[in-house]
Each structure stands twice: as structure tokens, then as C-alpha cells.
Image (cartoon, rainbow, N blue to C red; front, side, top):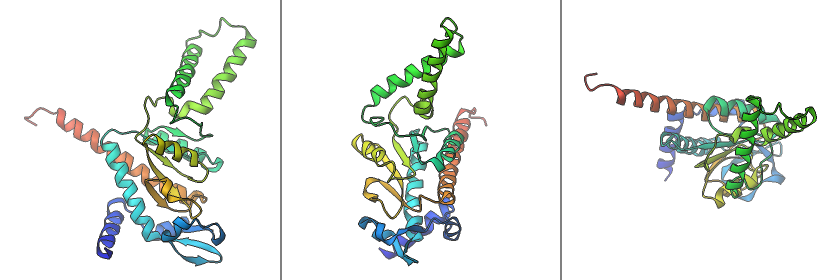
Length: 255
């Protein structure tokens, strides 16, 4: 078992360029105070420093590598990954990451029922898109100034709720959650609907809420940036390979 673990860890480090020293520089290893430890996170803790638990980065490499492998396979199959990060300090990071990778996102409050009552959510998204279409086409000019102001406010409210998922026409195959504690409802809804959960798990959360836990600090911006950068690399590289493969398949046999 120990040999298999070491081989798996080395493969993950090689395949996805996961570097423990770099993780330490980014603060990925810092846990919460010992009083906040969730019992199920004990296997991912290597020690204590100044009353703070230290996350075992060898375990992080193993688990993060497994998550990245899953994401790579998901993108290869044309699956949809939704990223969720609603803490104020990561909202802009989430938007930038999602837009660069071409995936849906939720950076504001998670709307209860987004997964479990998805048909209703889709109707609201269609309503929002229709209002946007009418505004762009100048169809709202027939209303009074007061009515237009009211409609603009409604569009803005709907944009905050749905902008990141307005092109999501079906449930995603997986959801990537940056803070399991804050967005626990997302994880629970995902599990109820059979959506795979990839989650950054700090030392105060239950990793069993995820299918692919990533033991890591979810408070430090540098830690979250590191994780997002690695996921972005995998998504972008996988999409590039798929596009290249399609282009090769379209070439005449003489080529």
C-alpha cells in the first residue's frame, strides 16, 4: 500500500506539476486552530504549530492530483464543471477563472434549489435573458421612464443571481466548491442530484461532503489562487488537446 501511495503521489506531482515547496510558499498547508478540527480531517493533518493544525501536503498532492485527473477526464468527455466561490474576497478570482476557462460559475449567494429545483431556475434564467434581449433590441423604449427604471433594476438583480450560469442548459456533471463550510448547501444539493463534488477542504469541514476532497487552506487568497491556477491549466490544456484532435481528424487522409 505504501509503495502504491508513493507511486501515485509521484505521478500526480509529475503529471500536474504539483510542488510541495510552492504549496508551502502559498500557505496551502495552514489549517485552523486545533479547537476547530473536524474529526474526519484528522488523516489529512501532519502536526500542530502555534496551536494551528498543519495540513499534510503529501496528502494534498495525492487528493488534488486525483481531483485534477477527474477534471481532465470530465472535460475530455465534454462534461460541464460549475465553480462556486461566494466569499467576498474570492468573487473576482472566481469570475476571472471561470471566464478564462469557459465554464459556468456562482460567485454571489448560492440560490437554494439551483440543483434540486433546476427546472424552475432555468425558467428564471430564460426570463432574465429575454429581458436582456428586449433591452438590447430597444423594445423597452415603449415604457415610461419610471417603468424602464424598474425593469433595469430587475435586470440588475437577475444578473447578480444568474449571470454566471445563464448559458448552463442542464445540470453540470460536477461542481468545484472553494469553501465547503460556506457553501455546504451546494454540496448537499449536488449529492442529492448525483452531481460530483470537488471541494477545497479546510481542517474544520467534513470531507465526506465531497467526492474529491482537496485538503487545503481555503482562507488565504494565495492558497486559493494556487489551486485555481492548477485547475485552469488542466482545463485549458485539455481543451487545446481536444481542439487539436478534432482538427487532425478533419484533415484529408493524404495529410
